[in-house]
Length: 263
Image (cartoon, rainbow, N blue to C red; front, side, top):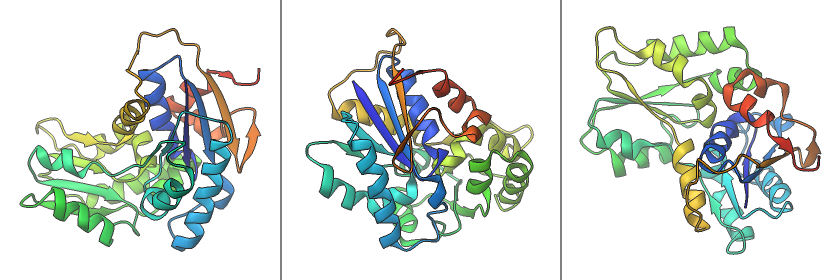
């Protein structure tokens, strides 16, 4: 079994690690194009072209499923990718976990990139899944870029700035960008009110990993022999290992420990 994931950069690490934990025997393909980042400010046409490039490179490895582990690409390019690759290749998009967060009651906050915050897409998620729940949309300028560089000082500054815009009485935070899941515990530490019940963070990695397995009829087997191999594609070209910044995160180190597919 082989599962592919694509993103502009290292935001895919959380979902890739989630797939590996569910099926340590699965081969993984991670396809990104860090030289074209950031995708957020680009036009929908540009994002679609770039995302299709990453998706085509991943599809050429003949995976059983492809995860679009990027909120921006899922919003702007998912339909185009599915139109080209399905039904031969199941394609799974990433949606911010507004629905499960709202199900637990409010108030909640949604941390997202400045362009996603207040967008028709995010407002539609709130309208459809969080009606009657108090929701605060929190823009996080610079956070995804800082995570991409594994720049600790910039991450701490961006997290602190977003935390200052987050109400202190929230019960849950939706991580509306896949990059944010790599620094989830730093976000929790910045937002968790003293003497309050534990703050719940809602990411998407576990859900999309489980959905990918369901789409191909594969059951989770976390106790399977860890013999999965890793293929890394950067800008469509095969690389020996993930980008150096990936090693700044536990998810990146987990994947880097996998045997390369062509070893």
